[in-house]
Amino acid sequence: MFLAYPIFASIYFSFTSYSVLNPPIWVGLENYSTLIADEVFWKSLFNTLFFAALFIPLATVVALGLALLLNTKVRFMSIYRTVFFVPSLVPVVSLVILWLWLFNGEYGLINTMLGWVGIDGPNWLGDVRWSKPAIVFMSLWGVGNAMIIYLAGLQEVPLSLYEAADIDGATAWKKTLHVTIPLISPVILFNVIMSIIGSLQIFTQPFVMSSTGAPARSIYFYSMYIYDNAFNYNKMGYASAMAWIMFIIIFFLTVFALKKSDKFVHYEGG
Image (cartoon, rainbow, N blue to C red; front, top):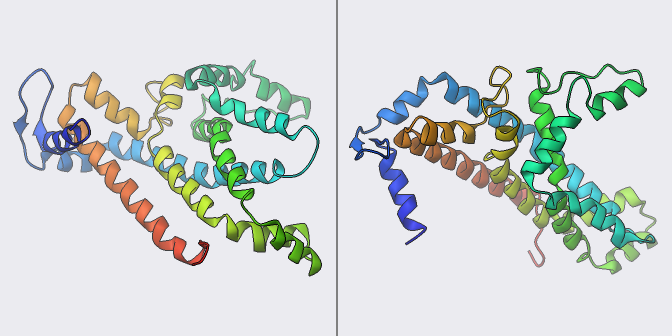
């Protein structure tokens, strides 16, 4: 009941004009037709898809790369694993405030370090060309959870397969490409789907950095526009319509990923 009621209520509200303070008024498809002509809707959707298109492949490569490094047999490995996982436990708001200082165009640590090698760093959060990449870069800080899942998958790969590859003279790169990646492909698929769902709902990081999406709404994401419509403009019906459009986008992207995975994902016994 606690799950079903909000779902069906939001479907109904998406076809109404509802301000919470007054009873909903049925308006049919008006909310959806208004969205088509809403420039802010398209701007926020573009920002969100741009973020997802950058973040998903980068997060996959970074998390998998860290897991491969942390799956090697060197001394103090448990300490290294802890060091790379702990950042994902930091509360998001605290993390964003820290990165606001790091991204400061004049006094930030990132531009200071770039200056040491003769690079004049950009005004990360004040330049529309760099604001979204900055959010992507900051979000990579939280790949620790995905890294742990990859690490668990790597430890399930039978050692006998690596021993057979060694006998055949396979290099480390070939063992990774032909043994490791195929055997953990279901884990990769799981993390990619979770990244699709998570990245398309990004809210806290850009909202804390700039609740208006400044500069020029370059970091004004879809979830922020839903929030503004629901709680600042009291347009709950409009916000519900936006939420269902996002659900449909996520649903089709997830189905697309599952369909395409048939050629790349190998299941044990499959």
